[in-house]
Amino acid sequence: MKNAVENAVTFTAVGWELRRDGKESSILQSITLDHLNRSVCHNYLVVNVNEKQICAGDINGGDTCRGDSGGPLSNQFNFYEHGIREVQLGIVSYGSVRCDGPGVNVDVTSYVDWIQKAISEHEFDSPESHQIPTQSNYSENIMLYNDCGGKNVASNLLAKIWGPNFEAQGALITDRFVVTVSRDLPYSVNVGVMQKNLDFEEYIVENVFKHPDERSNIALIKLNVPVNIDGIKPICLLTNTYYQQAVKSVPILTSFDYEKLNHTVVYRSTFKRIPKRECAIRLNRDIQANEFCAQSGETPHNYGMPGFILGTELNQTEKNTFVLLGSVSYSFNNLHVVTDILPYTNWITDNVAPN
Image 1 (cartoon, rainbow, N blue to C red):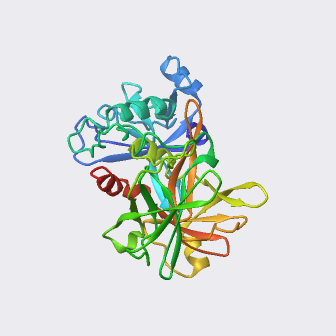
Image 2 (cartoon, rainbow, N blue to C red):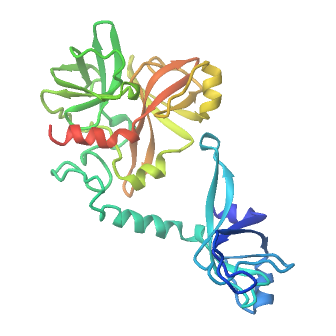
Image 3 (cartoon, rainbow, N blue to C red):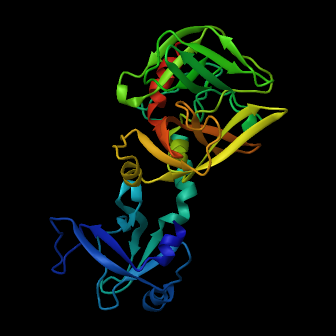
């Protein structure tokens, strides 16, 4: 967003500033300010303006005034899927005592890392915040399950699910829980978990949990015993809201699959997010609020199967961790409609923790 500040032509400021007659305004005022070179503020106010500050105003006499300090300096951006949004880029700081010229503002984008860190450190302070279970294998900070994510993308546990007139894929998000699609999923179902030799060993299903909202198309399958395969781990699922916000709109997604031929083949492919409106037009059907669309350039053997997982890699200190973002609901011509899993992490946690 730093470039958004540098390239901005104008900004909008709002506040309950003092009017020219010296009285407080009874309604919220707004003003459009030109983005000025920092040298303008330096010359007019006789102050040094650094790269973490914004010079803005109207050389013809317009500016924010007393009572506006601390208010937002913003601009509009088109985020395509989410439409036009007003985004705060600065904080009104100070100007001339007569409020008749350029003013200096704090550049908020220069402090994004500090803001995110502060929010992350204190977001669980509120008693209303959803608390992650405190069992030894459940993370209070980032992941649903601590012991997740192998050394690389090829060491994550996948599952295949089948039953009467049903076939889908899934992924283990703990050592006993598989996440998959709920549409047409029978309660009497078989689950095979991928082994080191890429064969799938069948496990007994203890329980099936379907989300109460049928439109969600998400289900959990509990296995009767933990899956413990050396070097292959459950897929990581983010439960920390800060990290969820950081990855929820990544434009390029990753997926992977395996095929056992004369040797092991790891299919790894990238998917590009497609705006919902474009996706709906191409498929001639509505895209639900809990869904997003992604397009792949190729279609290996399982990429269109329901339950096929999409995610992204989170850059951590020692490794890049593949984190789960969505599960394919249905596909057509390399265009995939995907259930967004992140909004359901509270429901997933509530089911996983006591079980």
